[in-house]
Image (cartoon, rainbow, N blue to C red; front, side, top):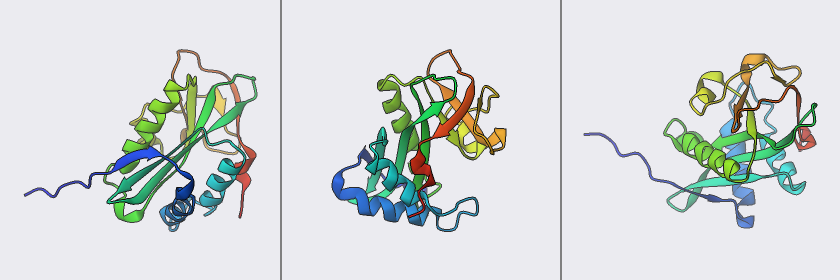
Length: 173
């Protein structure tokens, strides 16, 4: 007999979710070796600066179990309409069950509806390839290995230049 996958729902962040989102984000990255463990501060700073273009939570049994953030990025060529995916946070007990995938797919669909031109992500190439992200030399995030910085275009046009995330990504507290 197969075990049933938990059923969660996805919705937009609400003001009363802020503390729980910080907790989920902290727990999701707690033991990640690639993390500086500031992700919860980044999400808070993005929210405070009005840069959270998409902020969704997943709920299971009335509790928030995951969160995804999308914010605008700047491209040195001046091309607008591009965004950065992340952080994506899933409580450890719910990782590898599809909730992150569902959140990312929902967030990207919402971004497309907002007439975005594309999205970038800094992350594991094999994981993000399933959403259509790929490493391309046209867009660069300085100081990052090209294979880990990937793009997803919603149009046929791919800009060239250096990508810069919002200053909120420097938040340390």
